[in-house]
Length: 107
Length: 124
Image (cartoon, rainbow over all chains, first blue to last red; front, side):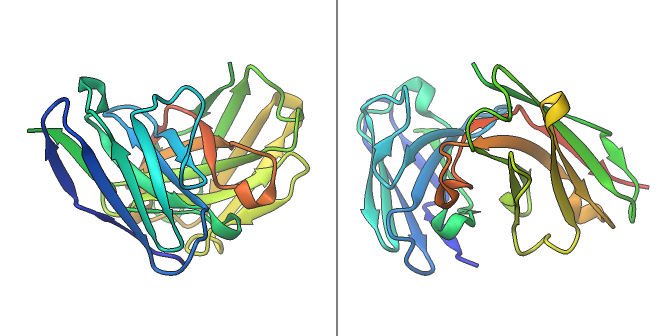
């Protein structure tokens, strides 16, 4: 099973600042990497797939990069609605495993 | 707009079978060749993909629960279901049903549409 490791566990950021979240895979997943946002009491929401493609309706301030085993989600200028937990997920070879999440909180 | 809704018993006794149904509205399960999956979320293990089923009935299961899981599609009611046998307290979680973002098998566990989640507690 491919293990996904996210860092940091918690990220404290001021509104308007940039947030950079990391995700590492225990083996190469090529570009089969997605990012989800989850707010309290809600289901995860697909933000990014294919490591860098934004899902429908996702603002341009969200961007993803990386391939192989190292991936990054960047939120260029944090808005109040962006404070949430973010999960990465690999879906290589149709099996999916998720990271433990990074909580982005208000500084 | 596609919507998914989980339902079933919220309390299950240890050693019994957990059974959940996902009702799909806004589109037919038969339209396209998407994959319909179950994911659970618990404080101890985070998000865990349980398994998925295609509208033709082909199933794909995650390794950790494979021996206890069965997922099936019931096209006559636009529903699909999850059965998890021999449950323990470790199976207490929020269970989500979801649809894949694409019809390709390699994207079977990339989920675009999610239900709101359903809490199942295993307790005697």
